[in-house]
Length: 79
Image (cartoon, rainbow, N blue to C red; front, side, top):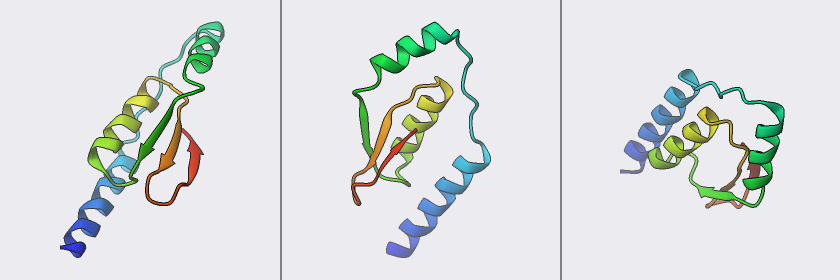
């Protein structure tokens, strides 16, 4: 079972890398306003979780800068 989980996780991450969405362009004032609204948000996530990948892709597509935290390792990165 761990091998299947590792294989599926690797495939999810690979396809996420290949089909990386582009963010939308907004006016500078509007983007700054959105950035201040999302400054206090954080996503606790697993790297290869398909639901977390979907949320991260939506964040990227909507050009939202939200902190992501790895639920396993407590690593912090801005996305």
